[in-house]
Picture (cartoon, rainbow, N blue to C red):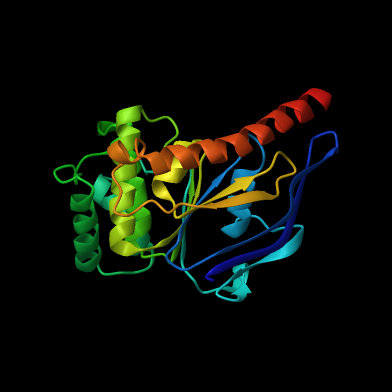
Length: 263
């Protein structure tokens, strides 16, 4: 196991001092090279959990271990891809992709070769000297993802990277992620509100309960790889698994609605 969370609890406080319990006794493990998707009702704490696992938030109780060491002290390189567009507008796409390598002191020639290879892999060849505002939303997301891949993190944390994209751009980006994962076999934790996305991409889907979020269930995605985004969703195995997870997810969604109505 490359990552283990043990009995994670996390609280937040509102401006009037009310305590909100976001995560309750969350325990999970992730194997090296595994692609794990986390789903659950809106507002249940999926992104909070991802940020705790990534080391961006400290849990109030419990611990996160990476390769057996506490998260904050681990030397394992991590990448984080958020919902936001984090490209620097004053840098070209090439300069954005090589940013992490530049910060780490890599020579210009070497980092440019790595960036050029990744740019070509995701179909951005010819846009190396373009600025972010000149690209579509899907193209910018590709640049953000390969900027993270460029410095070779062992674990990548993705927080709903497809938000705001049209259906075609989303499907193309999912295909890119599947191809890149197939080639690099990075460990990926992926948060999404879209169950079809989770099943299409992941080896395993973790379902979180209504807040306070805990692990409700886990589902093995035994669909063969490599996968095609355009075709996989029409297979009987996909449809059967989607129905099974959706039945459990919808129960948690209703609990979430009832909790909000009573609060």
